[in-house]
Image 1 (cartoon, each protein chain N blue to C red):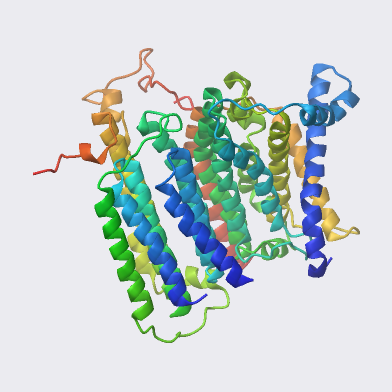
Image 2 (image 1 turned 180 degrees about the vertical axis):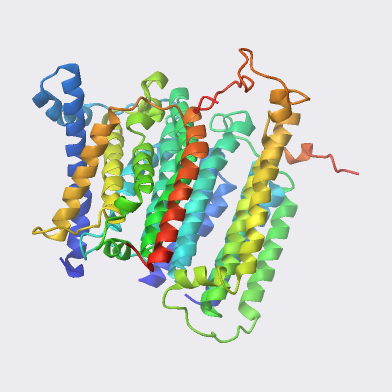
Length: 312
Length: 100
Length: 192
C-alpha cells in the first residue's frame, strides 16, 4: 500500500470500520445470549436482525426536538470514529500522517463529549437530557486520566507522531512498561463509547438515556457509531501500546487488524466482570485514585527514557 | 492567504465578540462574547507568527492566549455560579456589589 | 486548494461567531461558538501551527460542552420553547463594534508590515516545547501558578459546601454512625 492507493482506501475505511464494529456487536450479542441460555447462533445474528428491523422502522420525533443538533450528534459519532482511525498507522502506511496524531485522537474523543450531549439535548426529552448530563459528568472523570495516559507513549517515543511511536516499540512493546497507562486508556475507550460498565448515559434506569428517544435509522446510526468508536479506540491502542504492525510472517496491516480484534475481544470479555459504575462515584475513584497512579506511570516512563536514553 | 486577509478575519471575529460582550444581558452569554474576542486574538497571533516571525519563541504567546481563555472560562463559571446562588439570577444587571 | 480551504474556514468561523448572538437556542449558541473555534483551529493548522491548532479545537469543544450545561442550568427556562431577546444596548454596542472593526481593519491594511524574519522550525511542536522548557521558561513559570490559583479561586467561589459546612465550626463534626467523615449527600466512590 502506498499513498497513491490512499484515496481508494479512505473510501473503504468507513465500511471496514463498520464491518469490524458489526463483528464486535455480534460477538457481544453472542456472549450476552450465552449467559441468558439462548443459542449462540441466534446471538451472532442478533445485530443483523436488529439492523434490519431498525431500517424498516419509521423515524419518530418528539415535538420541539432540535432535529439539526440531534442528527449532528448521531452522525457525528460515526464521523468521529472514522476520523480517529485516519491517523492509525497500518505498518508504514497511514491515511493521515499528522505530526500531532496523538493530540488529534484526543481532540476527537473530546468531540464525543459534544456529540453525546447533543444527542441527549436534541431529543427534547427529559430522560435523554439526563443521559447527556450523565455522559458529561463521566467524561469529566475519565478525560484527565486519559490525557495523562496518552502522554506516556508520547514520552516513550519522544514524539506525537504515531509512526514514530509505533517504531519506538521495535525493542519492547509499551504495554509492558506502561501497563497502567494502557489500562486507563482501555477503560477510557469503553467510557467514551458509553458502553459496558460506563453506560449510564444510555442506562436502562434512565429509560435508555440518550438513545431512549431514537428510532429507525437514527437509532441504527447511533448504535453502530458506538461500536465503531469502541473499535476505533481499540485500533488506536495498537500503535500506542502493542507495537503497531510488528509481527512475523503476515503483512503489517494485517497484524494491526488482528491486534485490534484481540483488544476488542479483551474488552468484550472483561466488560462482564464489572458492574455499571455511576458517574458521581467514578469522579472520586478517577481523580483521587487513578490520577496519582497515572502520574506515577508517566514519571516512571520519563525516568526510564532519561536513564536509558530512549525507549526500552 | 495573506497576512492582511487573516488579520481582517481576526478583526471581524474580535468585533463580533465585542458586540456580544457589550450587548448581552446574561453572564454566560457575555463570556461567550469574550471567548469570540479571544478567538480573534488567537487567530491574529497565529497569523503574525506565521507571516512575520516564525521563530520557536513566538508560539509561546499563543500558549499564553490559550491559558488566558482557560482562566476566563473557569472564573466566569465560578462567578456565574455565585451570582446565581445568591440572586437566583444570572443577569449582569444584578451584579451591583461594587456599584458606588 | 489551501486558498479554498482558507476561505471556507474563514467564512465558517465568522458566520458561526455571528450566529452565536443571533440564534435563540442556548445549545445552538454554544455549539455555534464551538464550530467557530474549530474553524479557527483549522486555519491555525494551515498556518503550520499543528499543535496549537489541534489543541485549540480540543480545548474549545470541551469548554463549549461544559458551557452549554451552564447556559441551560442558569437560564432557568427553555428558550427553545420561549424565544427571547437577551440583549440590551443593542445600538450603542453595534456602533462600538463597527468602529472597532474599522479601526482594526485599517490597522491591518495600512500598517507597513515588515518582511518575514526566518522560517518555521522543521518540527514546530518540538521547538515550542523546547522554548517553553528553555529560553521561555518564565512563561511556563507564570502560567502554571496562575492556572493553579484559578482552580483554587473558582473552587472557593463555586463550592456550595466547604469543610466548615461539612464538619462544623470547630471541624469536629462526625457522621451519624460515628464514621470519621460527616455524611455527604452524595458519597464518593471510594467509601471514605
